[in-house]
Image (cartoon, rainbow, N blue to C red):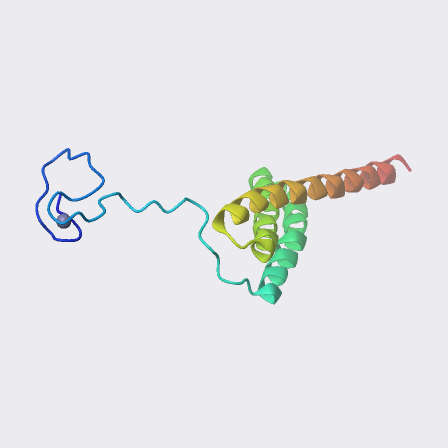
Length: 131
Ligand SMILES: [Zn+2]
């Protein structure tokens, strides 16, 4: 490898923090992962994506149920939950790390909401049957 400051060839396996020729810093710049600042979110855009994903998830899942397609059912539910979760997380996050953490958290929350919707839907469906 070469010194990034003076471009002199350095001996392999050199374990010092500074270049022996120019004294320049040889440590690899450590960007703490995930702490990069995100650009300010486009709030209207985030909310739009959130609502579209949140509402179309169960809608598509219902259509899959009608079509008796289990694969689209599952991907609709997961897709809706994850996309709406991350859209909401983007709205409230300033760093990549926060976006990932909140995205997962909101996705789980959306999945719980979906479970509730389907549970109520099933109860209503079963109720219709019984009557
Ligand atoms: Zn150097």
